[in-house]
Length: 209
Image (cartoon, helix red, strand yellow):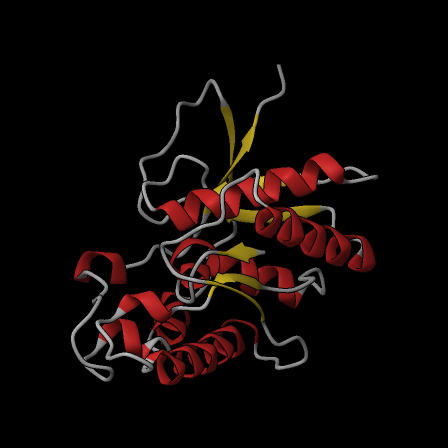
């Protein structure tokens, strides 16, 4: 699974992660950005926030899966400053993720939707589709939404996961204290309506013409 920020994994695909892990089918969780852009920080103050968000991500994954066997991988892109699709940085990231997929024999990547309004969410999808284009075996890209609107049915096939206990999902989200509280000062706060998460995820797979 590829998530742009720590908390998107629980918000958009928490049930998928939980069920895939229980079935022994979760290859791993990769975060695109370093999380440093969520708060107004003094110069040189990003390191503490980045470290905190990495700890939060590991805790959330543990609460979803019950395991610490496969800690998240962090690619370290700066928040809200995605590399252009034609840039060397983008190509290096695609190569790194493609190599990981080959090594782990990944056959599907869940990622934020290409038309999500946040630039990092769209960039994550661009990476997933670029990896799909390099794949030497069948690789499905399944999009999930955090902020955007559900796409037109004629373009995508919708797949709903089995439900998971909502309390477990909320427990995972509460790991992301930096996004829910004032623990790191002024900055992003996840809206209350986003904290009321459904028991199931809906994933969208592009229909082939």
